Amino acid sequence: MSNLYWLNEDQMARLRPFFPKSHGKPRVDDRRVLSGIIFINRNGLRWCDARKEYGPAKTLYNRWKRWGEMGVFARIMDGLASEAATSKTVMIDATYLISHRTASSLGVEKGGRGRLIGRTKGGMNTKLHAVTDENGRPIRFFMSAGEISDYTGAAALLSSLPSAKWLLADRGYDADWFREGLENKGIRPCIPGRQSRTKPVKYDNRRYKRRNRIEIMFGRLKDWRRVATRYDRCPKVFFSAIALAATVLFWL
Image 1 (cartoon, rainbow, N blue to C red):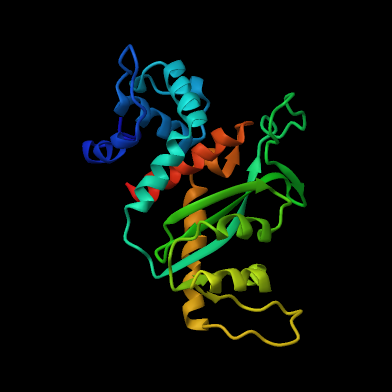
Image 2: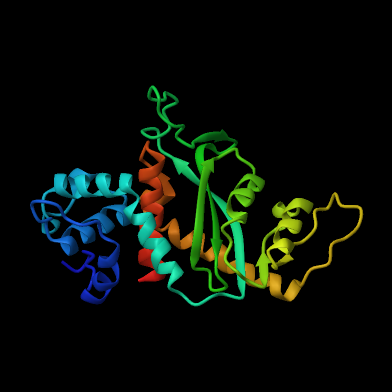
């Protein structure tokens, strides 16, 4: 049907190098299963509501859960992003993703990690920190609980920033230690100063206006309903949904 999603052969050719090797019994058709996984994530459906054209719902869910825990989808995004040309400008920002009640139960499994869900004025949510190239295509992601400061995401992403000449960010990232870290990496910060600063900070206002591209990127990611609303308790599985959406929207 016209509203179904199907990966084409060119897209599959770019994805196959990142697939784990099949041991023993051959896997079910990768194109059909992955197309079904994308359809479920994009439309925010339950796995049992998968269309029959994609095969058994259990097959889709098992592939999604297994590859998500293995980090396959995150590796695909990282691999395709690393193949792109080096960008002279990168951008950093963060956004909130609402957590559904099925994911935001405060109980934590014994011996398990935190779910990276926190309570803010907007309710229970997760914060997604991102670095993009000058065209707004995501290069790096970092996920934290909703109440975590933008500084924490900036510190986590600083060491993995690609080589670039400029970094654009809003005044929420205006900190002396962050500016120093960027300069040590040979990156010039284009960040407005906080109003609390006694001495104004100079920045390239014309260049700064390009930062709207990272906002557009977040908006496109949230068009995928299983990204805009977090249903998965496991943070690694939810991160896979984000990486899969970024791969399909920006790198295929």
